[in-house]
Length: 125
Length: 212
Image (cartoon, rainbow over all chains, first blue to last red; front, side):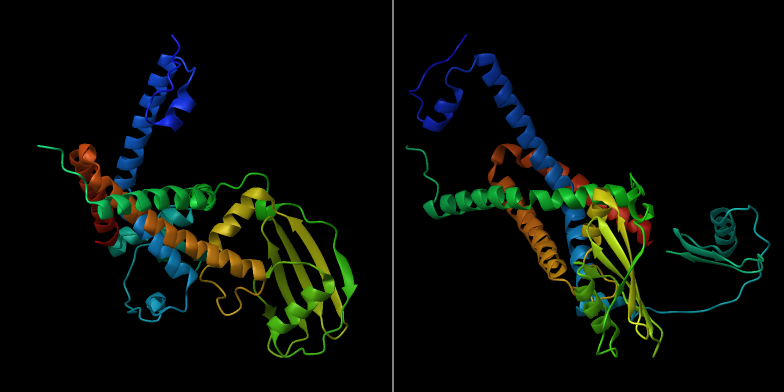
């Protein structure tokens, strides 16, 4: 079945759909509705994530802004603990073992190991 | 009773917001695509076809003349002009008072490593094609927080920095205008509220899990 009406008040829509099979028009309308709903709902779900990434992007690009000066205002403290020699050969395994011993939680960042294996430094973020 | 006509001012605001949301969204979409693709690359350490470990072209040397050798960045700029390579000077490596200066000249997809011997007046140049994927990551990170005092020493990095800012401001506008447009669609309000609440809960739970 083909629709050839041009009497629609939405002239532009009529021009687009003139001669288009009805089933194709129905599919197109359905796709448009689904896409619009997905657009709305995904946008709403990700709203705060987008704001976080947008704000952090600005902070990263403007390191001279006062709000970007957080590194200077960090609080540092040092303490000494006795530890068991960590198990595992890899840096991550050693860091994880030490974190468990020290009660630290987080992501292992940079790791450094002395060539003679006497020192092992790592960062937990 | 005739149906209530919407306030013309409100109707006009809705139409303007919808058009701005649509057209500004179309404008910013290529930039968002660059950030989206490169974010996936960064999150998964994905760098097909070499990237920064791609092979370098044969090293070549050039004679250069630098009159003002006090400031490292000024030296790098002068050498960049003389060797005729466009790009952002990534950093400048020079020991205090030393006569050897090294720096990379970066252009999305290309890096040129330059080593200068000021006493001999010789620049050693090594070029590397890092490819389109590395270019995406480079654009994602530029201008960034590192070496802020020298960043933007190439016009196009400054322009990209403005565009990066514009992308953020436009994204903020798109989200705000999107929320406004959603509030005027009555049919989607209840489901939208539930989805928004789910998003807020996920975000808070994730932030709490990371910080706490």
